[in-house]
Amino acid sequence: MIPLDQSKYDKVVKPLGKITINNLFARSVVEKHVPGIIYVDHAEDPKTFYISHPYGMSLLFGETERDDFNSKLIDYVLNTYKVRKKVEWLQAFPQSWHKKLPPLLGDHLFKSNERSAITKNGKIEEGIRVNFKFNIQKYLQAKRKNIHGNFKILRTDKAMYEKIPGSVIPKYFWRDADDFYLRGIGYTLIYDKKLVSTAFSSFIHDHQLEIGIETSENYRGKKFAMVVCSSLIDYCLENNYEPIWACRAENIGSYKLAIKLGFEPTISIPYYKLNV
Image (tube, rainbow, N blue to C red):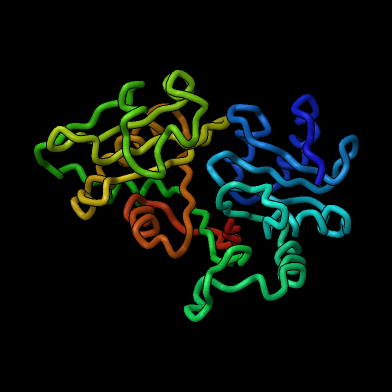
């Protein structure tokens, strides 16, 4: 695994464009919207790639039979030399990687539904990530227009950007508040004088906008997420963006919310949680 110099990121554009699973987070790194890192098997003629987004998502793709790369990949995944400082959620493409990785990881790998497994440093948890497709007709039929309450929804401004609490929030996906306000979009629901729910563009590329959503724990179950996401989806429809949704299958709240908003599951793929 060789860190690719940013001046050569153009070498990744064409291979990344062939990937059919959701990869907008990887594009954000390749197009230098955020300061991630790209590893390759060869600096001048790369065939295998590993893109790490600063939020913790990563994408492995390309040729699977690069022994030197794979050896260093396993050291990175298992954090043998403490290179990684935080958890990563690794996705891989094509499907052949999901046949290659289990033998390489051996007994370091366990399924997320194996309740008897104990997560330790160096253990890799395999789960399922779901990609959805937006169905505008289902959205229009299900859209909640009659939810009333003592709340208001505002476009997320630079002051809100710094104050929104939670782990899935704009400041973890954008370079800074100015960058988000200039190139991104978000809506925040204010209730009881608090910023309690936000829906925002985690990535925007071409005509696609991927939705991020966070609701404060004490305010969940009040349909706030449904309302604020609807504001963002309406923005997408008004501005010719395709809303994009993806989540872990075990994130029941996000999965159910996607369905309610008219998204339909299309692809389920393995992902690997890389512990530190």
